[in-house]
Amino acid sequence: MATGTTERPPTPDQPGGVRAPGRAAIAARHLRTDRWWVQPTATFAGLMAFIVYSTWRALSNADYYAAPYVSPFYSPCLGSDCVDMKNGPNFALFGDWWFMSPAAIILIFPLGFRFTCYYYRKSYYRSFWGSPPACAVAEPHKTYTGETRFPLIVQNLHRYFFYAAIAVAAILTWDAVLGFRNSEYEWGHVGLGTIVLWINVVLIWLYTLSCHSCRHIVGGRLRHFSKHPVRYRAWGLVGKLNERHALLAWASLISVGLADLYVYLLASGAFDDPVLF
Image (tube, rainbow, N blue to C red):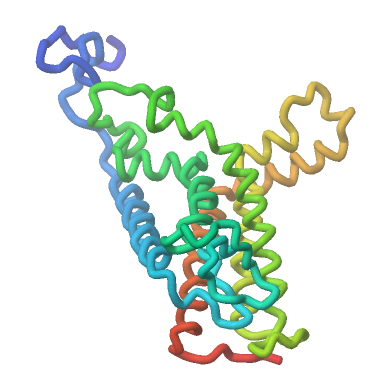
């Protein structure tokens, strides 16, 4: 063969994977000499840190509102036992029968959107499942079915989670608008929390609009861009955001965690919100 390898003969103990019969017989697990494991390891650590923190905050069901700020993990608050937030996202759609934290109701939508996102798929496929761990590094699995079977077939729900993410982003935008009040609900004031919420909502919108599904919805299924100049212009703008999709995914993930942490510190009495005016 051109690569200097020989065809691997059939062996009963290696029925599949890169060691399967008919594949090139390369003894080494990979031929890379760089530190290829750094990126998947760092991604694993970052995602695990967020999973642990968000799970703790979502299940705590406490310290998620410090007037006029509400944690993005709890907005909109759909439980009947939510803290009363004046003009805030209180929608008691779930009656008294819901006994868990109200965050468990709403987080399924933004988390579902991120979980099925094309960038995050690549990240956790490599970092958690080793499918594959990195480019040119053999995965440990003997078979590969892609996203054609359960549970990975649920990735096809990404577009529908995108629609839900738009609604959540709109509600978070209203929460940020309400942040222009002070603790007595008087308008025309800005605190540090106002800036924190607005930075978060801007990054949330940028990440959501940079989604591959958004790009397809805006400019897909068109035969002639020249006949649809508005959609073409929008498609071009979304395409520029899409080039930064990975960066926006991490930036918005960090910002939503920090926004929740800031509200938690205020609500728990760690310090008072610095008022700028």
